[in-house]
Image (cartoon, rainbow, N blue to C red):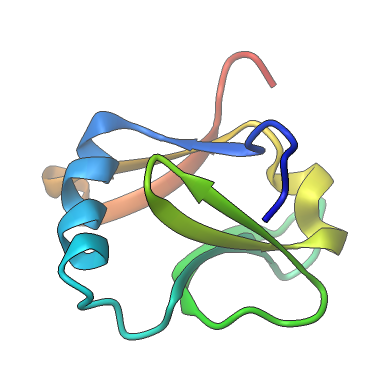
Amino acid sequence: MSNQPHPVCFTESAKDNLLPWVLEGKMPEPYIRIGMKGGTCGGTYVLGFDSKTEFDEEYLIDRIPVVIDRRQLLFVLGTEVDFQARANGFYLHKTQNS
């Protein structure tokens, strides 16, 4: 696991919806993957369950196991994971500080 500051963060709402899966061992894969799909300039964020690969950095963020491909770290740096029921679940966005 990396000792660097966390490149992403989770809102309280996101943690409230993810932690039960983590703590009860009900995640379909051991990690939450955060990344980009479809290119870095016009790409979209990716959030899902996944396994770790040789290209990944591993983080434990607020008890949530996260992997991010090293090649995508700069593009997801400063990303916040949020959950809103009215928006159909989880979404990612850049924070104001990034």
